[in-house]
Image (cartoon, rainbow, N blue to C red; front, top):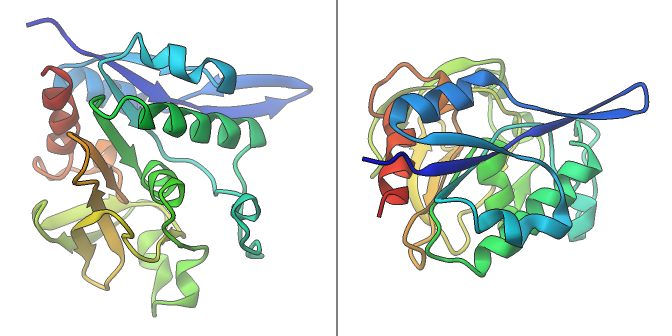
Length: 219
């Protein structure tokens, strides 16, 4: 069967006056292993809609924090902002995806937060302010999640999270109540996970999550 083309959003690195688009190869390897053909999406907000025409599915990756001042919220002192080019491009991509509701989308970590904020969900800017041990979600720590998506250990690396699911269906929570997985019931496949499946060893909650995107993109 022909591999579906999966567009993967990349990070932005600015160094010595130059801009680089970069991506951890774990995302690429996971998409390949799951049966997809990975294609990096360069950041160009003006070309977001045209970019989607070449893709069978979209993977929104992890990264630094959203500048919530664009959404009328004061910025937390612990925020470590993504480059503005990436933020403009990611939200342009999400707006373009709204016009293509049949195109499958999976958001990972920051990707899930972007999806949520785009649809009006409030953001917890620093988990340590609202749970007893925020450090257990930081630095590729492993913790348990449970819900309709499944139960088991996942690998996380984040200090922010969605405060509520808004229009999304909740698919999973962590064992300390953090929102871990969501889906938009009005779309064919529009799902976000707060953990990193590309770094998670559990077959169902790791590569299995990427395979869900690939399967949806083959239809």
